[in-house]
Length: 176
Image (cartoon, rainbow, N blue to C red; front, side):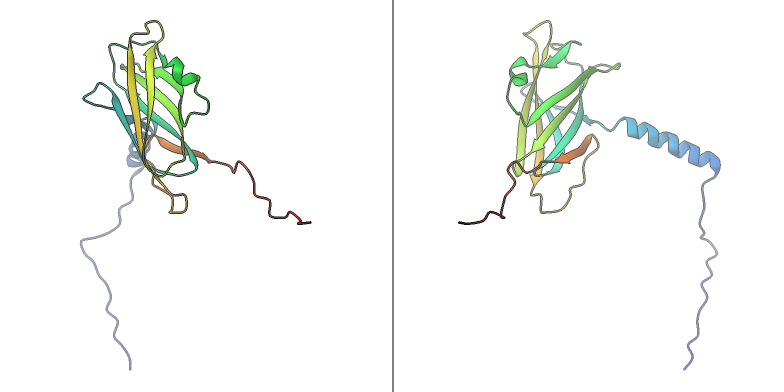
């Protein structure tokens, strides 16, 4: 038994490929968005700032980049609190703090996700010359088990590696 085959004729549709001018505009706008992949800190009622880093994976190290708006008590000479610099092996540490031309500061920090669940770590930023001006920044993330898939990272967050096993297990020991 032969089946009749209907031909598809679409009169209104079609595929449109962008012109050369359109592709230039698209690449320029994507370059601009690539430059600004930064999380913006949200001011809280107690004067602190909240940075939401999204979903992270346990036993992985992340770079989190965020911006703080202009804070009058900090000024432009901002650094990490001296108390936090002396803490041995902090899970969250600022690696770079740079002033932005439009005001405020850009903070690059590293976070080692170890504990599962909703976690929150604090950073204190102070003015280098005036120790009375400080701001607390809370970085909040949802850390999932490392066996439950790979999270989709927010703009401003990137994985920079997995934690290595501290003590390798040796199952090849001979029993005497």
